[in-house]
Length: 453
Ligand SMILES: [Zn+2]
Ligand SMILES: [Zn+2]
Image (cartoon, rainbow, N blue to C red; front, side, top):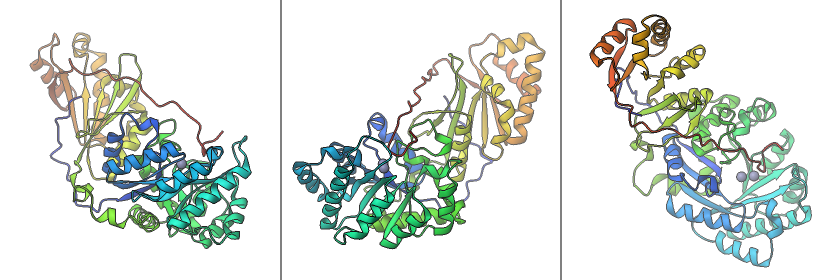
C-alpha cells in the first residue's frame, strides 16, 4: 500500500501529548511472541511510556524479567497466580524470592484468590497468596492482587494480618463500592481496565464517579479483556486509550487529567519515577512520533472486508472491522496526527451508509480504483454511483485522491481527465501490481481469569 501523500492543508497544532502507563499487561504471553516490538511501537505512538509486565508462574516471571531488560519501558512483576497455586512449594518460594529481589522487578504479582472458576483448592490459594505477600513485605515491594468472587475473604486476610504489605493494587477491580472503600482505606489502589467500557459495567463507572481517580490505576490486562471496541481481538497496551476515555468521562475529568493522575499513581506505587525522567535513548519517547498515520480498508480476493492499521515507520498491520477502523482513526486524530485512509472502491461501496462516522477524523481519503477499464466501458451506471459516493465523501473529508492503476487498457491521461471531470477530485497514478495480499490472522477468542465464562 503506497502512502506518499501528505496533506499540506492539515495543520498539526502544538498540544500536550497524553502520557500513559499500562499498570498490568502480560507481554511475555505467547500471543505477543511474533510481534512484540511492533506492539511496543504502537504503545509508544499512543503515548504509553511504561508498562508493568505481570507474571502468573515461575516461567512467565523469567519472561517478564527478560522483557524488562530488553525494553526500557517495561518493568517486571513476578508471582504465582491463584490458578497455579498447586505449583507452590518450598522450592518455588525460594525461586520466587530470588526473582523478586532482582532490580528489574518492581512488584510481586499477580497473586491472590479466585473463587469464580471452579476446581481450585481454596486453602492452597490462601497459602500461596499469603506467603508471596510476605515475601513482598520483606523486600518492601508492592503486591499486584488478582481477586475474583473472593473480596470478603481477601479483606479479612489483609485486615487481620498486619505483617502483610498494605502497599499494592487490586487489579481488574470488580467488587462493591463498600469493598472498594475498605481496600482504599487500607492503602491499596484499584486497577481499572477494559471492562469499564463494556455496556453492562454501570457499577464500575458509578464507582469511579464516586471515588475519583486518586487511588485508581489504569491497566489493559493484555492480551485479555480488550475495551469494547476491540472485543474479539488480542488486547495490547495501545488500546488503553479507549479505556482512558471512559475512565475520564466517568470521573468527570479530562483525558489528560485522567492520564496524569493514573500515571503518577502507578509511578508512586511501583517506584517508576526514575524510568520516566531518563529513557535508555535519553529523550522523551513522544518526540520521535510521526505526525502521519495511515489506515487501509480493502476488499481482498476472498471478498472479506478488513482494514489494516498501518504505522508507517513500523510497517505493522493488523485486522480491523469498521468500528475498530473508526476507533483507530479517532485515536490517531486525538494525537493530532494527519490521518490518511486508503479504501478500495468495493470497500467504499460496502460501507457507504456508514461514511458519516468518518466526519472530522480523516484528512485524506485515497480511493484505489482497480477496475477503471470496466467503468470506462460501461459509461453510465458505474460512474453515477461513484460520482455520488465521492460527492458524499467530499462533504466529510477535506482531501480526496483517486488512485488510478497503471497497466490498464484505458490510457492514464484519459482516465485522469475522466476522474477529475466526473468525480471532481484529485487523481494520481498508482502501481498496485506488487501489492501484497493481506491474510486474515485475527485472534482466536480465549478464556481468561477475568473473562466471562
Ligand atoms: Zn488477574
Ligand atoms: Zn492479569
